[in-house]
Image (cartoon, rainbow, N blue to C red; front, side):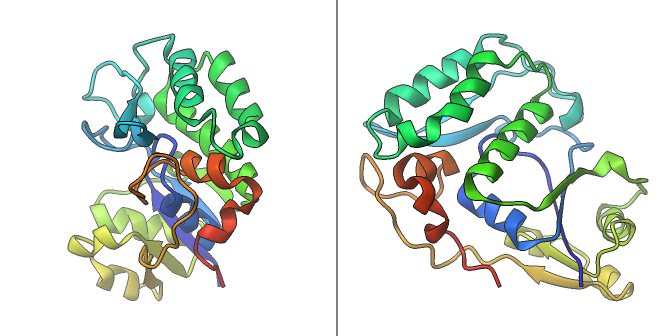
Length: 227
């Protein structure tokens, strides 16, 4: 059995995104699709003394695909690191976990949003001990059809099981997978335990950096138990 997940890249995603990655054998970054505004591609939530707040990367024209979308503010990395250091500097494990993030934020000159997201996902995977293969949808031949393309990507990757987020239940044509003998599974985001978090009340739906800076090497114990 080879399990595949296919998701668009997000900026410093929440812990559930990484639970999907660690639940599969190959995670395909699906970034040759239209960039969507007011979404998770270029932003995520952090905890601050005044409540949760968006940390966003400014981007240029919005009619491009995600992998064609460029950052419009060359100083975004230093600015984001200053914010993260300010709000998480007193978190119990900030100093333990900060080095690879600080290195990235202070030195990156990457212009493309998707590449920024990819590099940060890799850094976070390393911090969590995740070794799942990451690939791009553009590594494969792409056909037309919203669900048909996903089915074909799974087939090309040699998969026989597709893991999807629960939101896709509204539009995914499961029968197209069934016709190709591909099992469809759904990620369950319920039942996450709370961890030490600055600035109550507790909130699950923030960047995974919140978990890493507060729990460090123990972070994985606050994520899903993967069979």
